[in-house]
Image (tube, rainbow, N blue to C red; front, top):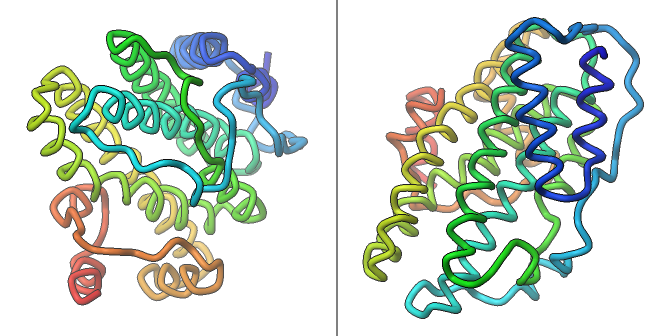
Length: 263
């Protein structure tokens, strides 16, 4: 089965266990050379990927605050992280499925990202089970996927505003969350976040790489283009504190880091 059809199959999977299994099987087959790339095949975009009946999706401002200093609050925090990773699976699959005509290395990168996001989801959901909860027990919002739809027409815009804004915000937040979890003595979650942070630096770096490649192919200056797109697409505001070292590892240039330091 060619890559676009395999990607569509995973995107449409509704249950988390089915989606995770689909992604892992696709990555294994891809690495074994059993999937035809078919880079230029026409794709029918999937604007509503499969998702389970729960969690209930509510506006972001209605999602309760998640504190780590109580068991219930910690479970809600971990659930929120699991929801981010579930959405991140769909975002990575969509980056590979939606945009035809990219080099084979582009599809290889986003299949790797989807595979790692699926692992992250499983790690978080397994830890959530130790707190007597599972994915779907708490309400969540759909902001990540809404950004996928807003950036659906251009891979350059997608690379700028999903990996380099939304995922990079996760890098910024990780040290703060780790501090709260250490105070709660949840050392297993600290370990899990270490795995996630390591991989997410790589994911943002992949986004940075393809953003720069697409900018150069169009004769655009990456740093100026990034700042322009933040305004043009009304992206979520960039707020300090920034994890500058993680962002450096993830492909942000020194001028960009200097600019962030002044915000």
